[in-house]
Amino acid sequence: MKKNFILASLVTVLAVFSSFSALSYDGTIKFRGTIINEGCTVAAGIAGKEVEVNFGSLSKSAFGNAVDTVAVSKNFSISLQNCQVAGNLGILFDGDRDANNNNVFSSGVSGVGIKIFRADGTTEIRPKEYATGLVTATKNTDTDMQFIAKLVSTSTSITPNKINKDIKFTIIYP
Image (tube, rainbow, N blue to C red):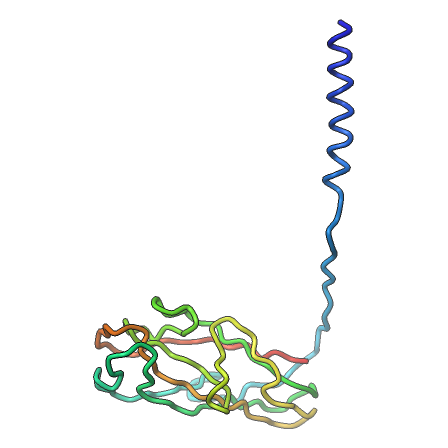
């Protein structure tokens, strides 16, 4: 009986002290933000808020025999109208990643991917990564976000097919 009491007391003490260690904190995550009434309006494209980048018809040989060969580059822009915020705008491109290279968007063609760059042509915007400070918007004005899309090889083995892939975008406000 005495052994059971001691065992029960020991279990109780251990349970109390183990719960205190579960409550220790290593840090804090502070969530902050602002809800804005309205940002900018994406200008209507071909079919609503769509921008089409047409790479045309390319020979498989345009990609050469090496991975990361650029076959063609196309400039495109996203036009924003009636911006109700002032400050640096950013963007998030959300699309499927290429099967051979997670840093490249899928084109829907095996061995070929799409890279998106800022207007400078050298700063890459990778899938699902925020790109900030693209343009500075002034309240009640229109602005364009300029980009370059590059069609690149992601494998030395390319299967001819139609490029047919959509990439969604979200404008990031200050």
